Length: 283
Length: 253
Image (cartoon, rainbow over all chains, first blue to last red; front, side, top):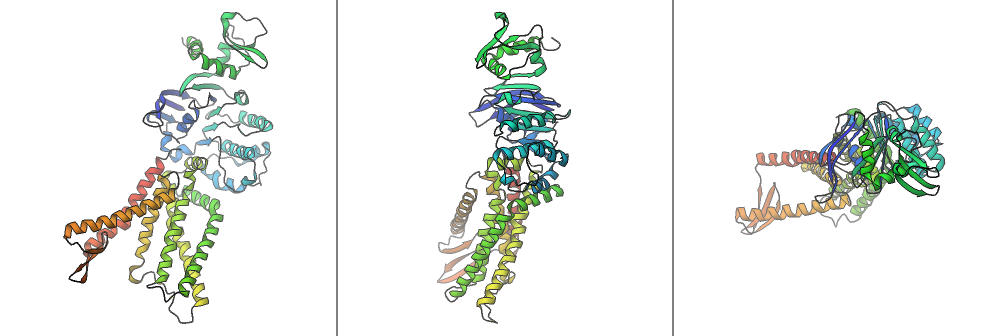
């Protein structure tokens, strides 16, 4: 559904950000885009949403080129930036103005999401706090039922109960024809939601794997138990003790610690990729 | 171009800005009243038709400010993102801005201008006085409306082209453009005619020089005048709209 081929993006003549980026995202999945500050996550998201234009190469979403910002493309896109704008209107007026722009918008779903987020439907947007505004915007984005939903740091600004509400709502948002792309620094907020992990660093994609495959190939242990040293790929001291990421020849199912995976990938991307490349289906 | 989306954008613009516009309308009405009273008070000191002068001042000043604010969202990252990904083509978004900045502003301004003028004349001018008479079609005064369309088109282009201080930068460019065209035209005329005493000129229209102590006026022939009118009033604004449309399509945030 999203196909990026040999994408080159430049800030200016001398500063190249992406130099031949390739990426494919399939419908029906929730992608978690992880990366440090300045890794290129926001630029990638803006390229996919048509807010930035590739210098060379192609980016296609359902066969359409985002940079053209055609109405048909925009009707199937909802982008929730880290800091979102909401006009000073009542929620009902906001709904009346903006919902008709999205052909698949569900009014009943919007009301349901607002209820779950504890936001009164007859309230005014300008009276809401930052977190409430964000929740109202997220509810609108989900109710728009677009085929591409892009969220930049969706849990930033949300309190702990709101994060739980967000996860509950998001777990029902996936559809077979929909791609959801989330970027986050706070991996623990979203690790149950995402079905595929994309780790970026220095404008490159270091790892792009399904969570099922990660679980199949890697295991994560608190290092109280004995683990053969050869199986350990990465280990890190955490407040809960030493955590190790290991090869998983027995395909034992363990909880994927995305933070450890992220740090391990950044510290040795070649090694981590080699594990998945060796075991690619068909090899 | 989708008419449904145009209507949706039109409604959006109204509901999000109506309070500011109502305040702006009140401000324009107050300034008009003040200027009319000023002109009435010192009517013997002003030469020419002050009513027309007042009409033009607020037509251009108010219209410019209004037009530059229509696509104000583009100057702000969050608002700009929301506006650019809103499902409507760049042509529809531009069409909405032009209708508001030219048609709606002109209609609202006419209502304000005539209402305030009538109110002031009724209060201050004696019955039967001709002071404050205003005929848009007398002596081709309506032609300023075409100039207004061109002016608004430049302001709109500037509001899409520049990211910061968009109205001021556009005004500065208009002033520099006028300065260069009038002085450049004068220089060109001196070169072409060999006449060193060209006192005034209007590019693509006329010039005046002194010959043996007499003022001589030279105008373009009617056919050339018609061609320049079409160029300035039709072709130039349409070209400006096309450039603005292209800039809006190419806008990155």
